[in-house]
Image 1 (cartoon, rainbow, N blue to C red):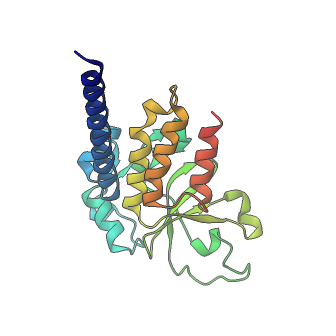
Image 2: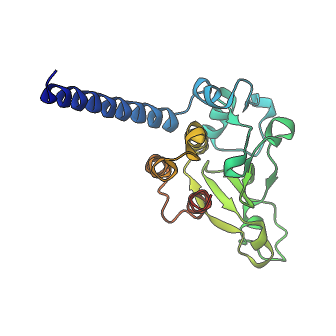
Amino acid sequence: MSGTETETETGTETGWQASRAATDREALLAAALEPTAEWLESIFGAGSLWRPTEDELPERLEDTDSRTFLTEVGFPSVHLSFLDYDSTDLTKDGPWSEDPDELFGNRYPDDDSPPKSYAYGMGESMGYSLMLLGDRGSVSLYDPNGWDHAAGYAGHVADSLPLLAGALGLWASFESRLFGDDHDAVLREVRELIDEIEPVEGCRFWEEIFQWLEDQ
């Protein structure tokens, strides 16, 4: 076989591998953007989702899309040590709840009026709590160290609960590759995918996750 033929075959194989990788990436991103119970359990394992019945849902969780996602798909109740993330209490006790105005410093000390809405803890990571806003369905970051001086709000994390579940699924699907020889390349690949869900730049939570992993 001539050198030209070998180079052609090598080039064809490289092109096929690149095409397959792009297809796999597109399929993974599509699954993360609209996560199903089957996809999430294929990553986290059977029985890993908190899937409450309608009667078990928090009464003040008003966002219809969040309620539907939880009862029909479910949210990961898992411990991901490489992200310092834990939501295992969900399957035991359900989410803890609090007035978001109280958490995020939007309530005056002498204001004893009833909460306008509630926020629900969907996991802890890096010393923060990821809070589902019950009236709108987005996820915000709560910093307990800032609570007593009106600095509990630490930024936006995801536009919806399904997108947070999808982002966690993306991370977990890359876990085995994150700490190998191609650590930096894998982190870049994950960042590109997470950017499709929530821009990393300007998002305190994702920025700190990436910084923490870059330092490993």
